[in-house]
Length: 380
Image (tube, rainbow, N blue to C red; front, side, top):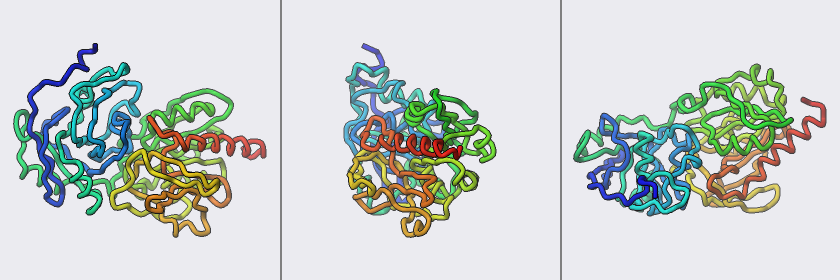
């Protein structure tokens, strides 16, 4: 057995989490401890039952501390094959119970070892039901956590001050922190796809690579540079934070509209909506989980989807610009649009979802069909 998977026996270190409203939670410190002893970020909750490693490594969680509502985390360990990014951007995690043993043949190391190696801290033993209810009532808020004893020890007063000083994700360009620095290629085939990396998950790249040759480009890439690659389609990826501050990407998409088929996911959906003149609103506590029911208005079918976003498109602002193609059945939030001229479409949820569900995976084929139809019309 991999020694990283052995039963965890080290002495627990007391830790504290303090929210911006002063609410305090006690627990045990897990993972890496920063030099300051304090980790801060916007605290959100995720309702997925599996996929904790994919969540931790999803660049869309940049600037955020993730609370897992499922009580047992770490029970199947971690595997490098499940990483969604080379370096996690998550600020930290909050869990109820850290599994003492990782039991899965694919496991390469325990969750705590993974966190430590990635430089991420966390707090376990927390009453996550109480914390989730706090966030549901008051909305997502910033918080700070750290060890109350041992290495780089802090006190609750320091955590409270750190939470007060944390800016959160509103008005912050987190995309610039996670986008690829250099252009790279994935897949092969006749279709040429230019994919904007706003914080793109590795699983999305894998799905796109099945459709053709994919050129992944930085978020700041210009429309002129994109068109010079003579693409059959342009993809707008997921990513973290406030879409209204990613003005450079919105301006680029405006230039690309009508010139090439466009497909967007999550933040890409919001950027496309801003490019056509729609408005964005911030949800109280966002959608984070793998169990959101979404209706496809074009087929009437209901899909169970994976989601991760704090912002959403205001459907009223789409009138005369695009039709709403998908709706979240929990709260009526716009989950997808089709631009009225037919040149672009997008969804708020994740059709590539890893580890699942995969109900919406057909959207990649819809993108392929759009690219093929455009090419057959000689519009390329």
